Length: 115
Image (cartoon, rainbow, N blue to C red; front, side):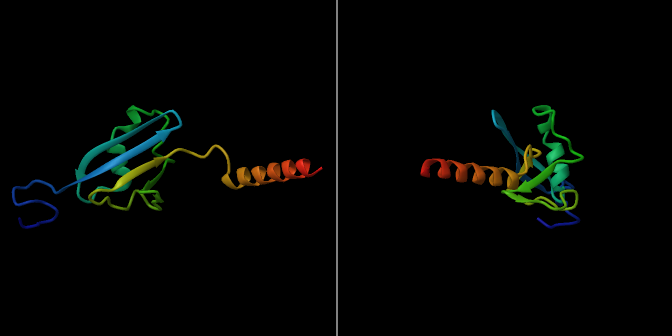
């Protein structure tokens, strides 16, 4: 088959198979879909229909990744065959602050056990 501007000889567009994943503490979905070659990460996530399962997804501020690595420009980066796009939930707490608080609590517990 000859390639001509991302189309097959029959005029059909090349398609790539990808997965879209979203998880909450009590629920998750992994959807498989085919999108046109050249589709951006953001457009593929939107096309997945994931928002019909999780209405809290805000496409204007959502963070996306592929296989655990954050995508800096999801509206510009094209998906590749086999990609798993991950839709990240907003952080509730700053991870650095959580670690700091945990370390302080461990220190106090250790001091209390020593006395």
